[in-house]
Length: 295
Image (cartoon, rainbow, N blue to C red; front, side):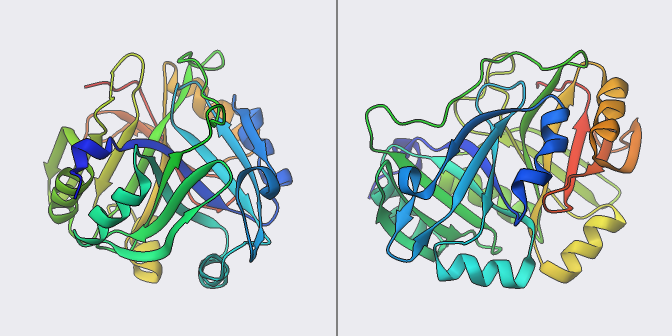
């Protein structure tokens, strides 16, 4: 069996399920985002059950993106998730060098199958649950030329906005930190503990504070909006993380663009960073906005 290091896991995208993506992506586009790719099912991801369409959005960073997926969903397990949760953050995707070996390795180490390994026109892939039930998608590119386009690492807009990763609310932060370290070769680049709260900042082995600042943050529920969502849905993907050179301007731009205010910029007592929270339109879920942070 191949090891996590041999499988070369790299953070790639967060998927948002939404039934009106052409309307709901406009606040993203007004908020300094760009469309990196658009795919119909026939090009990207088609099965005997059907297909969906996909829009990939990036903002200022080189690698990390969001994918908006719209019905009709092509798999029964996706339609079941949509029936239970509706609009929302559905899964995190990692790219690997060997998807078939990855599925064997993850299932042997506490993951559970959601979608079996399958070969698609441009990539091989599958979906599993992590030990707390969040979805993980694994992709291996198999086409010589097909790739989801990356932006150059150039902060966007006058505020210098960058999408840098995602955060997840965990039942047991220490246990999930250990699992992602041991099983997916993620590494801890910073950690915060105070007053019963715990946050772990992780990344993959290609992390670079200047050119590839892809972050994967695990934490327990701190705010009322997180506790309420956790009570209803269990452990979940909690936010897209953005950083900005001018956080006040980025906040003002976000509200103008159509994001909804949750918490204005203020010093976070746990991390010490100027931090704000907003709701995005696709899933009504959370965006985290901080000052630049590159440990």
